[in-house]
Image 1: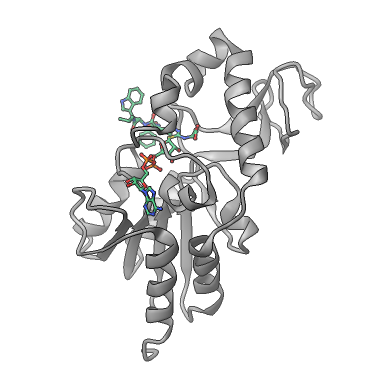
Image 2: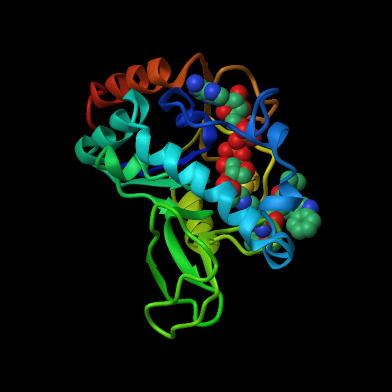
Length: 230
Ligand code: BV8
């Protein structure tokens, strides 16, 4: 049966009220990413970095999954083949909609010890002095992947893309690597590709569905679940 791999970006959570990054009023228009989303930034000013993520964690806790998150969880439940969902997002809206997902850029709702790498559920408000439950070090950071750090699951994701029959990208501007490179891996392997966005991103996809994800994604899931099963 067919395998579908789906990569989501900030655009899938936009209609849940969480900011995207590169729109004119996006997160990187308000914050300099080199001051809040790099290891150097954390070494230089951990309080500022924790404040940036505490604000986003608070917004995430107040947000709810939208119809696009719910539709992908339904696809994962009802599709007769495998559906691999990879997200660049650090929010937990996919999980709260009932999907299982690979967080290649980590998770806002998890803390990590900079000393021993232990991970634990992040408190609503984090600070570097939060003692690590495993080693006691006061080196707590959000368990997110910053620029210049290796994303999680890169090999696993590349393998999943290569063995897919369809690769979909939902709500991503395709500016951040290695995530933005997965569509090229699919193209070179002659795998059908489709993008869902408000507008064309310039990526070389076989198909595109343009409009808000809460409309285009549920419509698409309905459509393919009605297809005669091969
Ligand atoms: C790596 C977590 C090596 C934290 C993020 C110099 C030094 C070091 C590295 C580099 C360098 N130069 C380039 C690099 C590589 C760098 C990179 O790509 N930089 C870019 C800026 C050029 N990448 C890295 O550093 C990565 N690590 O390279 O390590 C390596 C190499 C190969 C293999 C393995 C390892 C690590 C990158 C991860 C950084 N962390 N996030 C946090 O969230 O704070 S990235 C950040 O951007 C977010 O995670 C975000 O998800 C991600 C991508 O952005 P998008 O999701 O696409 O969001 P964006 O706003 O851009 O677009 C939203 C889209 O949605 C738009 O198209 C919009 O039209 C659409 N949309 C909006 N509303 C809707 C919608 N669509 C549908 N419906 C709607 N309603």
